[in-house]
Length: 227
Image (cartoon, rainbow, N blue to C red):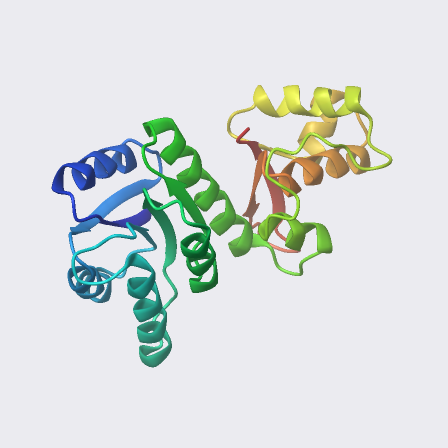
């Protein structure tokens, strides 16, 4: 369960965003703050995994809050918290500063529940991918840093559209997820071929990878369609 701290000076907006977060599978709100100082105290006490930060706070900017959080993490040896800015600020300089401060993304108000939940699912997918990545390939790094946007439909050389559609349908009909061997059997493909398409979907953010550990040997990679 991803623990979220919601930071917004507007009490009604903070309540609305908290409701959006609570309605998203895998996320729970552990605290709400309405100022930068309150956010820093709450982060130190609650140790959230993700903080939703407004830019405009009564005592400091959200960017200053994030910088203070990073300094405290380094000073105290705390795990790094992920940050998602949710703000009406549209200035390119502010967006650049948020990126340089270490924000995962930047969502401009006003937005609806679906827009925030899409970003939350992207955060969850990214965290899961990093937790299970092991030794990275360049494709992994490109996807994590956004060089290849999640959901890209462009197939790399050597992959066929009709086979990609077959693997996609197979994943969609097995909500609990499949291994490459199971996908190959269900789709009448070779295991090597199924694995290539499954990894492509994982690289482009459409499939989530988890590891299942058995008694011996390497853990089994399992793929679940996330769209």
